[in-house]
Each structure stands twice: as C-alpha cells, then as structure tokens.
Length: 107
Image (tube, rainbow, N blue to C red; front, side, top):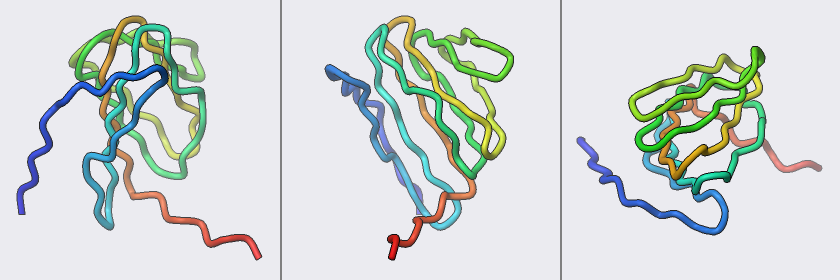
C-alpha cells in the first residue's frame, strides 16, 4: 500500500522530529531545525541515510564537518557517530535501516 506524507514545515524553539513511516524493516524520520539548532552527535546500531530536503546544514563526521544543502545525502555506517547543525532553517529526512529494535526494560 502506498503512503503519501507531504512536507509540512513544523519549526519550533528547538529541533522538531516527526515519524514519517515505520515498518519492520526501516524507520523514516523528518527533522525541522531553525538556523543554529542542532542534533548532537549520537550513534545507532543501524545504517543511517540523511537527505537535506531544504536549507543548509553541517553534518558531524569523523573527518570533520561536511557542509551540505538541499538535495545532498550523507550515509553513516552502524555505530558511527552522527549529528548535524542547521546553518539556516533546514528540513532533513533520515532513513534508518534495519529498524532499531526496542531494548527490553532493565530488570
């Protein structure tokens, strides 16, 4: 079944994330950041593909910051630290695969 999710800008006082789609194989998350806002470096056990849909950002990477604008995609390997800072208002979309599994609660 086809699912259509239109781009609706949802900027806020801090970065906004929106779950676009999720199934047993992958997760798609959209991020809305005002210029100067950031998603601090973190890791994921999955591969992460992040595409800039609008604006300009600096991606954090082991080799330093990578500046990218609309139409650019960055790929991070599993467990590779990743994050980004908006250099101007920006919208990004991350495809995370395989979908990270939910950790069981600690006993």
